[in-house]
Image 1: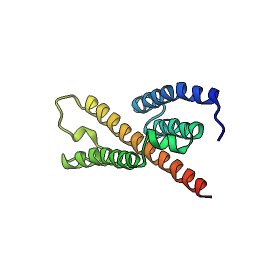
Image 2: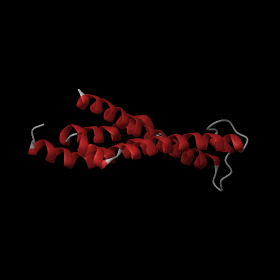
Image 3: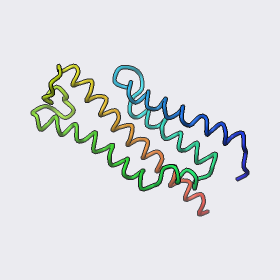
Length: 142
């Protein structure tokens, strides 16, 4: 891969803004368009862009495959944990009003929705990054 200073500089400048926008989409998913899935894909696109511009080895240094596996598990645990917590307190799966917190039910529902969106976003980001790593690894083997 030939080094292109312009592409690498633009990618270095764009990645933090892409990640910031992804966090915005994830955290505002409960009240506007977007959510965990869309934000997770946007966040993963930052790592994919790094892999395309700098090579797969550089991308793997920024976020290692071990971290990707941990992140995907963490996201699923957040999602499932909140759902099971609701069941333990006598509600339905993801029935947030059943969780006894010192807030009003609408505030509890809002906090739990945001936490679930974050869990989904982490999982989607990790899975998309893992898929990119797998495809790029097979490409290098050929």
